[in-house]
Amino acid sequence: MYICIGSRSSKTFKPKKNIPEGSHQYELLKHAEATLGSGNLRMAVMLPEGEDLNEWVAVNTVDFFNQINMLYGTITDFCTEESCPVMSAGP
Image: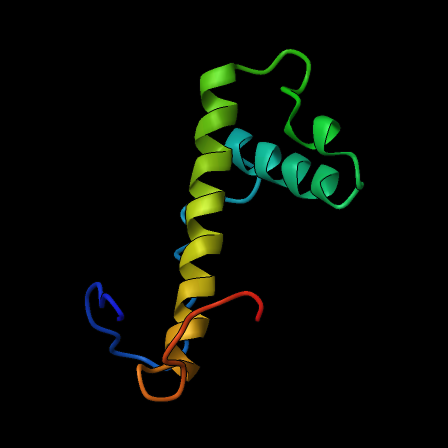
């Protein structure tokens, strides 16, 4: 069973980029992106020194939402109830 949320009007899904380059939020997002690939999850989620916790959480929450939306958009392009009767990550 699939739940369809909204409708898709275009074939390519990209999240809106509302964070202007050079802004403080942009710098926080770049910091988060740089540390996520480090292999050290503790370091990746650690509040950077001197930063506001609420702003750090907000930037990461918006980025997480955008990543999940991109994943969902990719799945709905290729997976229908007929082609993927069961959504599963394994056997």
